[in-house]
Structures are given as structure tokens and as C-alpha cells.
Amino acid sequence: MSSGESADASPEAVRDSTADSERDTIESILGDAIIGHESHHNAEGIVIRADEVVEALSTLREEAGFDHCSCVTAQEYGDRFETIYHLRTYDDPTEELSVVVPTTKDEPVSESATSVYRTAEWHEREAYDLIGIEYSDHPDLRRILLPETWQGHPLSMDYNQTKPQIVALPEHANPLQEDHPAEDDERETMFLNIGPHHPSTHGVLHLETTLDGEAVVDVEPDIGYIHRCEEQMCQNKNYRYQIMPYPDRWDWGGAGLLNEWAYARVIEDLADIDVPEYAQVIRTMSAELSRILSHLLATATYALDVTGEFSATFMYCFRDRDRVQDIVEELTGQRMMFNYFRLGGVVWDVPEPREEFFEDVRALTNDLPRKLDEYHDLLTRNEIFQKRCVDTGELPPDIAKQHGVTGPVARGSGIDYDLRRDDPYGYYDRLDWNVVTEDDCDNYARVLVRLREIEESAAIIDQCVDLLEDWPEDERVCQANVPRTLKPSGECYRAVEGAKGELGIYIRADGTETPARFKIRGPSFSNLSVLSTMAEGEYVPDLVATLGSLDAIMGEVDR
Image 1 (cartoon, one colour):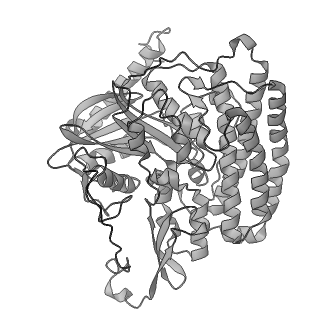
Image 2 (tube, one colour):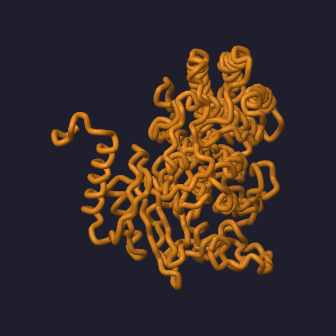
Image 3 (cartoon, helix red, strand yellow):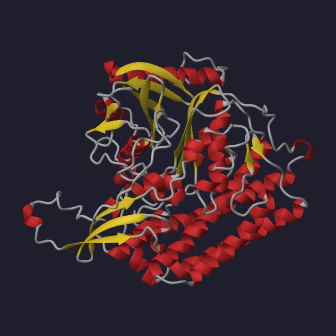
């Protein structure tokens, strides 16, 4: 604390002082590039010119340390279009900045941020596809979720929903033809479609792959096959009751409770809702059960990807997932679409008899170390598995950060980034647990991270059970007193540590019962964007192993 600060200064005063200091620093390094300021929850908002994007973001990255472009949100107002770059630092994600770039309605053109943050490449393509903003100097500005022949931009105000669409099927062309000089003409390339209906693509993902012999020289993920307009549906629902069931549907691997928490966190910030401590403990316990469900599924399917056939690992993982699902079903009433979180807490307390429920949970966590040792015998200590995974799918940390990679994929590249610790929420900051990282940056490291994270989740669950067992009966408050109708105002981006990484939601609230803009930052979207860089120069079996190691869920990619 500086000598000028009062020893008994309120937390609000300290935060305001810090925000003023950050604003002065940013203004000093950006100067005239800033044309205005906005008030966003939890983050300073600056407005810059559309032709100053590259220079401003480069300065913020190099001089202010904002090395993580976590999300890009595009939206339309009555008088303008707007792009918001949500910036953070990998070292401290509580250092946040919203960079707002407005454009005119008649000429919605802005500089592309791709040369500064590679992750902006896919995000800006999505903004162009759905909103209609164009980004000059973008390396590949074409639609990403909808077919190239689609007419109009579905989230723009003037979009005609009744207009018929004709989707053409273009002939396959060699994507390397224009990129390689004449001396490469002797290269005999073959275009190979993998998916969209193929077990190794983990859902409706299409990989447009170009091979030179058996080596991968180019791979382009073709997404959008399961785009379900989740953001637009949430924009048509009220905050209090109707949005919460949707987050479960973004990730069908068992991580639904983590997704519910992402929505709860952002609207609780906007509406200034305090969650009771007892409910925070239940949320933390249930979220880690959900994380175990997701990681066990990732391990099971990855064993299939690498071995190519049903194996003991797959069956053991589903055996253990079933035990976890029984507990989660007993708690939430559902095995997949949980809908257990509520704004201000959870829908109900742990089931009665409490002692029996806690015994079941402890039996699960006590048995996990033995089960995990079996997985290590079957996978990580298996020589064939090691040959398939060690030194394949390499992802150096600088490349991972450029693409906005988070979660186990980032931690497998040695990036010590976990929002449960770095931007605390729930009860995580009062429990004893560790962030798991591995430094080898390959497929094998990502498997190790997920298996070790299951151990940490079990440790968190045990501590939550200890707390819940001893919690005084008259203090077991599951929900805050939330108004029946919520009409917040303001803009807020908030994220949680989902099973795949940083799961963030941006909401622009305009004082009505429904969001004016609802943007989902799915971790699988950014993680999948780095696949082409990871797979180049490897073989087709390595490509399959690398894709599986990303643990991408297409419902979270396409939304």
C-alpha cells in the first residue's frame, strides 16, 4: 500500500485507485489513439479508431503485457458497428482491458488484429460471418460457420430471415496451389477429407487435409455443421429463469455445470448478486464432479483415437464415469442437462440422507487413486501409447498464447494459467489444491495434465464434503434473495475455468429483461484454431492423435 493510501481504505476505493492508475498508464502509452472511454464491469474500456487497431494492440501487447486476447465480440447498434477485443494477461487474468473499435453503419471496415493476436483470425471471421464487419488485411476473411454462398449476416439488424438460401457444393481444389512457387510443382499432393462424419473428429467436424505422400502439409478445420444459434436464443430469453438451461448444451461431455457457472458469474456481477457461502461450496464441489466427467470422457475417447479400437481404457473410463454420473444425478436430478445452478446459488441442497450422499462421494474420491493408477498402466506407461504421443502434436507456449489457447491444452505446454486460482471465484481460494502443468508441449503432456487434474478435483471435492458435513444447519442457505425480474444495465465479460479452458460470456445489458448482446467464448473454439499449426509436417495418425488431445467439443465450437 502506498503512503498516500489510508490504512482503512475500503475495497471499492482501492479498486477505483487501481483503475485510475491503469487508465493513466494506458493513456500514456497509447496517447492520441484513444478517442474515448467506456465503463465496463471489471475492466477498463477504451475506444480506439478503426484504422489504429494494429498499432494500438501491438503497443498494449508489448508495453502493457496484454498477451492474451481472450475473446472478440462484435455487435451492431442503431448508429454503428462495434468490435470489442477482451484483453488479459496470462500472468494475471484479473488485469483486463476492453478495447472498443467502432465503425460506421455504411462502411463497417476495421483493421484486423490477426497480425498481433493469431486467435483473432477465427474470431474476426465469425464477426464477419454473423454480424457483417469487414477486417482489412485479414489473411483469410471468409465465412467460418455458414457456407460461403450464404446471403446476409444473421445477427445484423437488417437480416432477412425469410430469404431463401442456396448452398452450392464447390469442387475440391488444392489449397496449396496458390501458396507455393513453381519449383514445388513436383510435389504430389492429395486432398483428403476427414469427417464431418468420422469417429476421429469427435463430432461433426470436417478437416480439409492436404497430404504430400503421408505427411500433412495443410489442414483446415471446417466448422459450423452444428451451429445452433445459441447466442441469439439467449438474447431472446430473460435473465432470471430462461437462459440457465442453455449452457449445459454447449458441452455434452459432462461439463455442463461449469458452463452454468460461467453464465451465473457474469449476470451475478451485472446484477450485483452475492452468493451465500454454503451455495459457493456446493457449486465448487459439483463443478469438480463435472470436470471429472469431462476428463474421463476425454481419456476414454483418446484411447480410441490412438489405439484405433475399443480398449480396456475406454470401458474402464465409462465404468468410472457412471459412478460419477450417479452422484451428479442424485444431486441435480439429471445425468446430462443438469440445470442445477441458479442466479444467486443452486436450486436445492444436497440430497437426504446427507450422510449417505457424502459416503458415496467419499467412496468415489477414495477409490480414484487406484483407478488412476490403472489408467497410467494402460496408457502413460504403455510403450506403444508413448510412441504415438511423445513428441507429436507439439505446441510451444508462445504459439499457444498467440492462439488464445487455455485449459489443459495450455497447461500441457507449461503455461501456468488457471482461472480458479488466478481470478478466484466460488470457494477455490480457500481450499488446498494445485494447478497442474507439464512442460513437454506434446500430446503425451496433455494426457498427463488431464489425469493429474482428476486427482486435484478429487482433493477439492473431499475438502468441500468436509465443509458441508460440518456446516450449521441453520446457515445452509442455497440461494440469495434474487428479484423475480432482473433488468440490469452495463457491459461485462466474465469467465470460469471450464473443462476445456477459459469459458467466458460477454453480456451487454440494456435495462430490459433480455440481453442486448450475448457472446459465448468457448475454449474449444480457440484451442481448435491452432490445429493446423500443430499438425503441419506430421503424419495422418499423428493428426488424429493431435486432434484428440485438444478435446474439442463441437457444440462449444459452433454454439
